[in-house]
Length: 283
Image: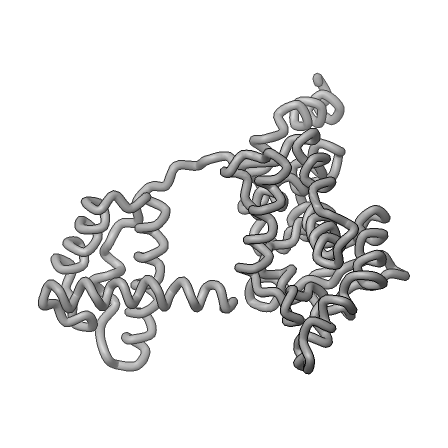
């Protein structure tokens, strides 16, 4: 699993362990009644259904592992019902907002050149913020105009990059990255290979890239609910509205299942109407 999934599962299981200790429950031998109390306590604490589902997913994985190791039975947790989560449409960035956001970085500074390259690449590829953090200079093929991304489960995918994003990357690599690397007296091997460099001369973490995005969005007057993941949603929605087929968008996003990608069709009803009108014999 991806490092992000491992961190989330660890956090959820630690929360379960603390609850079990407070309530005098053996975390491995917990029966169905105890586990239902745990879920009830999360509901009383006003955890969102999606958050409760994530905790329950971690518990199921833990008890599945414990059963394989002969430490416990997974029967109790398998009897729990996953809460229904509302199917919300993903937030996207409007075209006017996107232009303001992409114009926000101060390109007179090395960090501004980096920020501009980050934003352009996010919009060009639909990359997750964690995927951006893992990018190396060698991940960008200027000649082929592509970026090699490593998604969940370290699955590799190659995504085309439009010329404006490549131009921002070239400017950053020529005038910004070297100056940022020089901020460290002895850059590590990881920093020397990383694409996005911090003002301390290190590879930027996903958290650091997220903070930069939030600051740039704020300076551009973008609402706070627009997150880095909204850039990914916008990438997918704009492709569908431009005529891309759902299967291609699935490949570009790195979704394992087409059902995950289908949520974007709810954002483009006009595109679906046009497809039916064009393709149906009586359209």
